[in-house]
Length: 219
Picture 1 (spheres, helix red, strand yellow):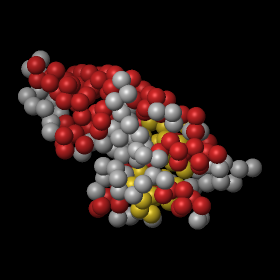
Picture 2 (tube, one colour; picture 1 turned 45 degrees about the horizontal axis):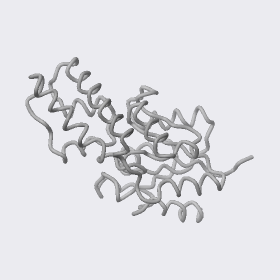
Picture 3 (cartoon, helix red, strand yellow; picture 1 turned 180 degrees about the vertical axis):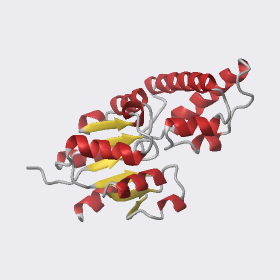
């Protein structure tokens, strides 16, 4: 029996530099909305980065406050298509050491999972295109599982794979909350998109994804 603890990874801001594909995708999408007279402005880069880690509903409530549901739906479809196209164009990039770290952990017998609030097609496309999928036991996205919080999404992975608590690695407070809510050890990434305040309840703080190897080895 494999007694190695499972390790759950957030995607955006933990393994993947999403801003490289999402900023141009968002700008193009909002320009389209503006040209069609559906929304008056294009959000700046900092506002766009503020949505990383949010659920789908939270993203569009934040970026399109008061907009009609049809406008939010159209924005989602346009921007998701833009992001998927940018992935295929190889515009995105993993954080340094991400693939190598997952390869080492998988070779050591750990079950590895991606747990992301992103859409199903987006999350699976990133994992496939950037070579992470072979190291993963499971890929969990809020888009596929229709969860409202990352606590619920992590719980789904635990339930389906009958997992004992392990580590949850992420850059936003939602990752830490998900870990605490499921009995996992929260590991916060300073190199992602979260703030120091969001990391205050983490058990460990890392500045590079490879540092999770030392934490796991020392447990």
